[in-house]
Image (tube, rainbow, N blue to C red; front, top):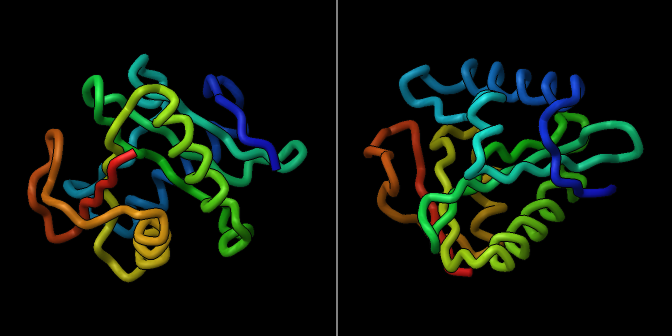
Length: 151
């Protein structure tokens, strides 16, 4: 596996992200869906990584700058056929290292509260994220869980 900064211009990552948004919309009510679309992920405050296994995208993740010290983890996804195979752990480790290198001192995230998101919450707990109140422009929402950790 190789983790690369992705400019989001390729059709394979575009389809991977379309599937991510479709899946999130099928699980979470529209008013509680916070997955960024392709255009939002191309904004200058976002750094996006793809996890490649040869020529296939098997995972992705991003960070969005909130301010000089604080970033948000966005768009973490593993290809369904590759879940429980270490893709997410390897990517999250990479993102934490890169966020620290970029000068951030805190990384926060929003994820779902449904049972479907339990493996993601367990992963974030394993990597030192603690539950917190909503941050940035988020509001309390029964479909959302908020987590944060210092870098």
